[in-house]
Amino acid sequence: MADRSSIEWTEATWNPTTGCDRVASGCDNCYALALAKRLKAMGAGKYQNDGDPRTSGPGFGVTIHPESLDIPRRWKSSRVVFVNSMSDLFHAKVPKDFVHQVFQVMAETPQHTYQILTKRSHRLARLASELVWPPNVWMGVSVESADVLDRADHLREVPAAVRFLSCEPLLGPLPRLDLTGIDWVIAGGESGPHHRPVHPDWVRGLRDHCAEQGSAFFFKQWGGRTPKTGGRVLDGRTWDERPSHAAQACLSR
Ligand code: SF4
Image (cartoon, rainbow, N blue to C red):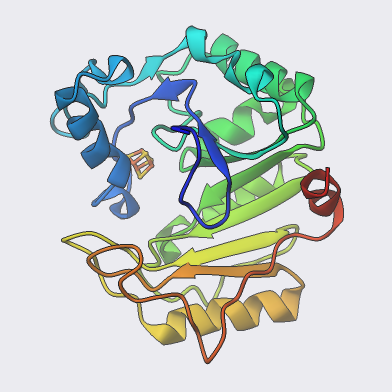
């Protein structure tokens, strides 16, 4: 099925919005931007709106898709769903009312577990108090380098059942990362033709930090030309921890 995902830490994707603009060095090799260009060329209906060539690209203009809101209601079995793998729900061009509608759908479909990931942590923190936060919604921010540690601070203000960090593509060490209130950390190296290598000590540092502060640690990949190139073994084993409390209730349904 087209909505099934190959991403190791989720099962399906749901894109009620598509398109985005680069905002940080973590966006330099954005897979979604490259994929949107291909999808536009293939004639995919959701990817015909071009973005600003300085920050976005063909097929990657921010677009809302009200017709996609009902998709999770139609799934017969429960799923773990990555919301907006092809966009950022908290992009300034996504109207606040539409963000509310996405959260409403998630609240009304408790059979699914939703994972939302953003780099727009300022807007997330601003809107958080207006949104409903049912237990099946996990909220995450990207923390790929030491200059964006404040995103974790913004996430701590959000009353989500599970708060997680995506440290991918990991671009440097994060020795001062505070994991207070953070349930889960996903780490990974970059993949693609222009991938920037990840140093094993940066990943070890995060893993040890998680162990000290009680956060679950998931190591997704070393990266390379393709996501599978380097495998995902760190110090002789894979690291597949997931958040324990509310999360397990959601996953076991
Ligand atoms: S915020 Fe995410 S989706 Fe948007 S350009 Fe950056 S990496 Fe791509």
